[in-house]
Image (cartoon, rainbow, N blue to C red):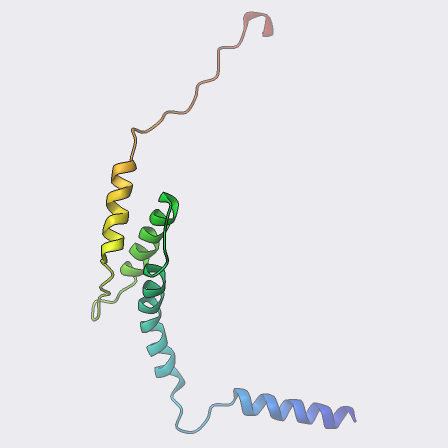
Length: 110
């Protein structure tokens, strides 16, 4: 029985994993890889944001996805929401803070 089960599962795995005639897996994978950033950008742009953190995260993600575009087909991700996110970040920017300095060590502590 063990041999029959092993033969069945090995045959099933071969049918699933073996390259099929006429199927060009390399071109299919390349097409999916080129369209994935555009699909992700569309999904990110459609999310509603109510906080500054969400807006900043969306702007950062869209910037990363935009930088992933190839020279042949650059991504057009400069949407109105990304523009408002960038302006919101600029408006919320504050002067850089310095780290707090601890008090001096007392004389009696050595």
